[in-house]
Length: 176
Length: 101
Image (tube, rainbow over all chains, first blue to last red; front, side, top):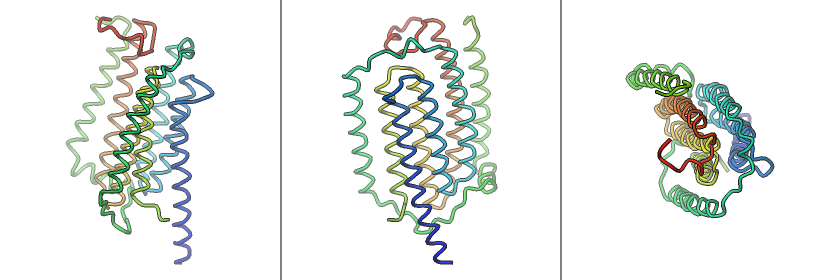
């Protein structure tokens, strides 16, 4: 039994590295694809990023969120992106040059922020529990959502209604 | 080496940095939006990892709300981009410098 647990632990570790590498690689290809500047390619790699991130969620025992991630992001948000890309017909946008100054400024600022993050990560005591036992199943999450977080839940539903009305208004042909 | 909170946070930071780089570097509005999604996802990953390693479920509820708000934000933002494209025939940030429509 101990050996099986050990083996499963090792598998989970290997899977973490696989999914993390996949997430970061596809993330790089979303923002800077050397072969294609087409936004459709970026959207497709965003799907891959999101699916491998759902794998990371499963490794963190957040099963409900992994399902929601795939349903909402890969299922709805990306479809919305693809529809808008098709609607805008961005063919002419592909052949613009990336400005050197923008790239340099981006790398410098992002490198600085990343350095601050990683330095603080090693300095901060994280007090993580040695054996995490929490399970992100649907049932405990639903209990929490409908007991402690009822008010935010209702507010979010109002927010979705506002977003829906706003989108209908914005996408009308005549804005008046 | 055992995978702990540190590893997940490192992945989350790297993903956030990638999203930020995309927002600064790219000039296409839609790709900038995708980079914003990457940054939101990085925050989600950090929250889920904290929730797991602190044995509290609250972080996951927060991620649930973030996903909902992100979906609403994407729909409104893309509608704005479509409305802007109808006026200006461009989804390129360098063409959108004046404040008047």
